[in-house]
Length: 315
Image (tube, rainbow, N blue to C red; front, top):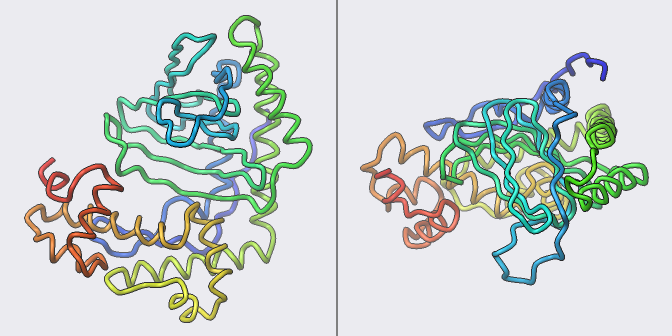
């Protein structure tokens, strides 16, 4: 595959919370195309791990099968990751470093393990858009504290993309019985080329750039007012937007609802404050992060991180 020239970063940075809870530039979203190109240039196409076979969607509440109803893939850009899946009813584990591609078919079962800090590009191919994310995992057993940056394409991949994804699903069902490396390699390259074309189209469109900047302004406002009461309607009024449009911006660009985005920002701020001052009183911490009730703050913190603020501070 020919090497592509780096993309020009958009001029507006997404706000994020720094170690002290201050607002600083986000390292990921504006250079989404350049980082996608970096991952593609590292990709080891011939050694891609094709995840499958597929499983029927798990019943509601069934936590024994970890799967998604969408095909997806990952390219490691630094560090190492192990991936375990089921192949013909037996556990199959693959380990890889920079350039390793892990692909999972629709409803394929999978688990990931990080023994060291790892960064990677991920793509989730939903029917209505492609979710491109850049992910940093700190390593070890913890699943808390990863940094994610999202880009949701304005449109799905379309008929050509569905055909490629369907072919990969079918090949994943065949398991390791056939020598599929060359075929899988070409299909994955086509899939990422289609994804890149959609991301590039998003970034070259004036309306999309305007929507991105509006969302970034909303994120900036949230970061600067996290200790205050925040509502969707109130923030929309401040920014001069319709509340439903504000919700759409967060779903597309943050990958989460308005409420969940605020919750994530507040818990990130709480974690940063606990790291800098583990003796901080929970009541004061809750207030600084926008929670009037300390008990409610503790419940949210535990749900998001798996630990209470006190346990988090003592780690």
